[in-house]
Amino acid sequence: MNDQFGIALAPEISVGGITVQTEQTPPRLQTLSDLGLVCAAGITGQIIHRARWPERGLYEARATLTPRGDYLVMFPDGGHYGRSDTKVNDMMAYRSSDKGRTWEGPTIAFDIDYDQHGFVPLIPKGTDCVYAFGTQPIPGQYVRENGLYENTPIGYRHSDDDGRTWSEVHLVRPTNDPDFRGMSVMRMCETDAGTWIIGSHESNWSCDPLMTRQYLLRSEDRGQTWQLLPGARHGGWCAADSNRMDEGRPINLGDGQVYCMFRTPVGRLWHARSCDDGKTWTDPQPTPLVHPDAPPMLFMLSDGKTLAAFHHNRYSAASDFDDLGDTLVTFLDRAEVWVSLSHDHGHTWGPPRFVLANALVPTFDKAFRNYQCSYLDMFTDEGEIHLFVPHRWERVLHLRFSEEHLAMLPTREELLPS
Image (cartoon, rainbow, N blue to C red; front, side, top):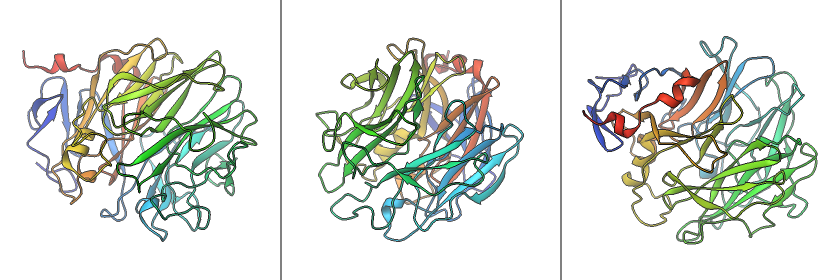
């Protein structure tokens, strides 16, 4: 069986270590052949966009519900900013005015002469302004040599017309480290006090294995001034045994509490929390959520209380703390997406529930591409979950299902043959 673009579906895949036939799935699963996925029953979806140059791919897709009620999704198409000395991508935008049923686009969001990495949306409370934060690899503003090619200024643009046109970029210069360079592509948050917090990490690919350090950028005055936490470089957080921690995702819990989840290569997502509006933080510790060297995908449900952590629920690293070498075992872990819920601010987590898995046979010469279902984004609207997935770094998928269905997705035990 082929999907609608002629790519063959695998005859069988693994879901939680259980072999699933794609043409005859168990009762609580379904094959969406046009999307190249096996999903939990009740999920529907569509392909919004396919990469202009499939061999170069596209990258992180992020979406938001705009102040005027549209859905806006943006992503870089054309390659990764850190892999070339010349411009290779454009930030593309799609818009939906009918709750995601149809999409208009693509348009180029920012007509600039350098690459982009991702769209980190923020709509401050009480405003109709959309902000687009992210990594800014401006020529001459960062050093590509000696393994530092991913570390760039962090900056933001804003839009006063619902994300149709954007300002020039404004660069973040922390008062305690004005020349900070890092990478920011994970969602940020605004606290009840109006404080903005975004994660950023620095990396050094000349180290063997790779070294990363995690930071948080914090602003109390809506982006005019910033502080780098937990301190100036190179004092960021890391999981000591691996010399790694990156792609932090802060989320507001209310009442001065902020929670943050981190990527590590040690088989678990890690977390930290703040009880003083993000000024100080607990030392990061591992969560029980099984996850490979891939990002946290953490969101708040519409009740403002329940956390949903999407994670891969499998870990089989080729070697301890590898440097993301292009090996099958490293990236096959990204083929499955599960979700766990927390009703107590991330102190405890419910059982992993299956969401989706890649069902296409390998067609790329890079394992990095063939099984990619990571870096998904999410928002809720009128009782529906909307997921956006950069599937195989080649297509942007929009999936939807009812919010109440999230807690009823199948666990591994419920998928076992009776």
